[in-house]
Amino acid sequence: MAVLAIMTMLTASATAQEEPKFVEVPPCKVTAATIIDTLTDYDVRHQEIIADGRWWGMTIPRRKIILISDEPSQPVRREIVIHEMCHAYYRTIGLEIPEQIEEQLVQQQTAEIFKEIFGK
Image (cartoon, rainbow, N blue to C red; front, side, top):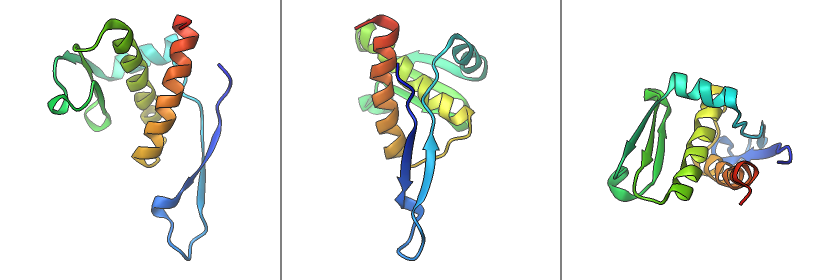
């Protein structure tokens, strides 16, 4: 996987008089060490329905919980695990960016990490 370093403009906190703020967003690192750290810190729960069926995964950083739906097939659940691990990773390194921007970055990286790990 190519190293991903993105400069993201944080317009949510900028007003017309302020200079746009930029933050460097490092690539999500899903390694054995980050997986072990995440599993050490987070309670990973499997359940059938999450948020009334709106999502197949959810990370709740303030409560250190990751929810994974049992509904989708195994390949999809693998992607969900990678996706939620990236959210947890970003909380662990203290990254705070607007949710929509983070979601786009995590989604992109999930596909790259999945392909790297599973070759598909």
